Image 1 (cartoon, helix red, strand yellow):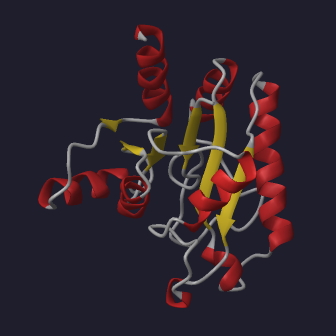
Image 2 (image 1 turned 120 degrees about the horizontal axis):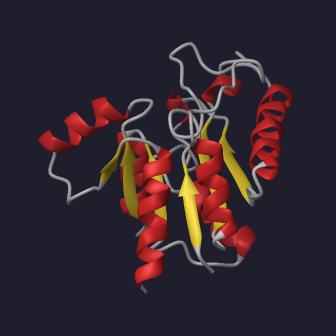
Length: 184
């Protein structure tokens, strides 16, 4: 099974320090929907791992989150692709749960639900917690400069991390993933 794991806010859609609270605030980053569809059409299973502490903070509820995810999935389907699974952590950072990235609970849930191994899969994110979760689970982290990516890129340069490929957008990361597929 070919898999790609994606963070949501800052990778697929615009991010906000005030949280994305409604379907109207959920705005895709240019090219992200088409990138997901292109990976899906190439046979990749598309899984999304996202921290959504706005639920735990009571800023929005699971109904609003579901509406955002329906919009995301509908747009990808309109472009000819499929999102196979969306996994989210509703907890606060102070809850110290296993599912909040950089914890790997969401990744374990993915493996259980899809009866697969995620080791070696590309994990595209914009934050240090995405890179840390990917590395902790044996995935290949790819960083995008959208969302918190520029700040994360600077942090990675100052930390002791192995080389993490950096891309301007999800679209450019998807092109790289697909180009490596063609070489095999």
